[in-house]
Length: 239
Image 1 (cartoon, rainbow, N blue to C red):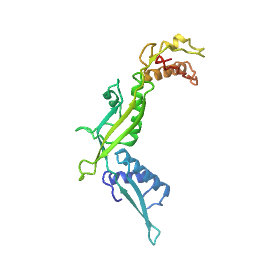
Image 2: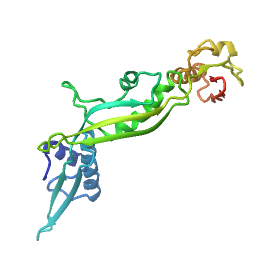
Image 3: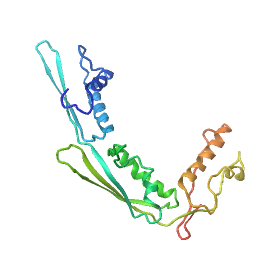
Image 4: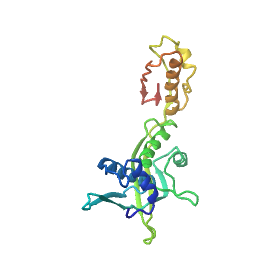
């Protein structure tokens, strides 16, 4: 194994063994390929997204194979700052505290991971939708990397989410149709959302889940609850 620094050789051997790549046994090409992919995933978990992992082999005159795993570890990028732009009414701190991606502090590594950043893009819009901005959109996400100290491998990144809040919506009248097991008042009694309240996508989804659960408790596990969201863009009401 060559080039492994951040990931211990013991960990790599455990991955190989788990996929059937062991010394003094027949070499499984599939097991080796699966092992290489698992090693790459381990590096992604550490924030080394672009790490390359390959393998070469030599066969001696006794038909024994020597496998060499070659690793080129990518640099870690640490988040120096996260900003939100375009938010006129929702404080940035309310959005940022919901994100998986965090800036580096003395007690937190602040490692930038692409998978988490992609999920956070959805979280940004959802946090706005939880506060009434149901038409909010993420316009773009800028990630500006830079290396503060050329002698260090780690890089620093500044992340900026550019959003469009749009108008603030309220809940309108919530109606139920097609119900036979429960009356409409019985179903609506369990709703978290109320007419006139600020629209909250999490409450809206909880109401749908609540109806699913009510039917499931009665044995109707395949009952369908299909939402029909009516958006009044003039009066900023969702019913």
